[in-house]
Image 1 (cartoon, rainbow, N blue to C red):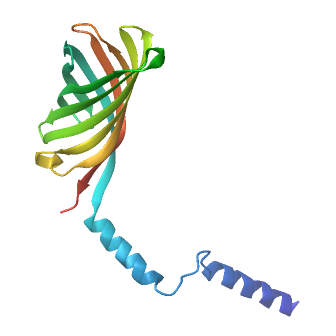
Image 2 (image 1 turned 45 degrees about the vertical axis):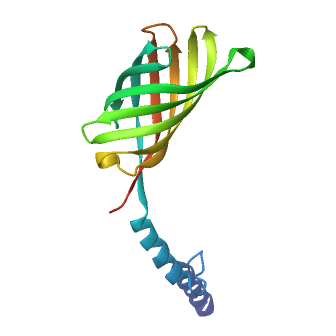
Image 3 (image 1 turned 30 degrees about the vertical axis):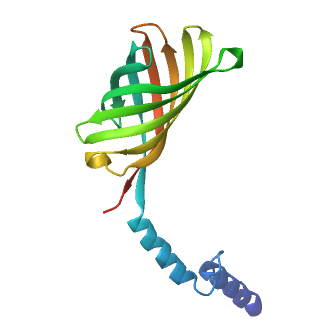
Length: 168
């Protein structure tokens, strides 16, 4: 009985102190280097909100962005391609002007017809920089929603993604 109790106690002590991820030689140095790199690299945080715009011209729209990024927004379509099945693909430049600075993105969108000129929007926005607090910003945003391609038509989008800023 004494042997059994000592054996169980030894097993519990070993299990309680064991790490399921054994440390390889040099792992502590690599972990320290990874931590230092994370401190000096970009700091990313999730963002989401809405974009409400009106079509202002044949290749432009302007309006408001609200949520984690808030201010004025405008978009200029730089390339447009009609695809089979009524799909439309476009590239654009987007500028969001906030009290903290200006955020710029390069957009790649696919529009699916609902009942033309009404389209469903699936847009990937690659953050390309900015000014003020957004100087050097990177990241990716994704928008979903609808656009009505008539003069003054409504652009109604929800954005979600990650905004990254260089650590100082």
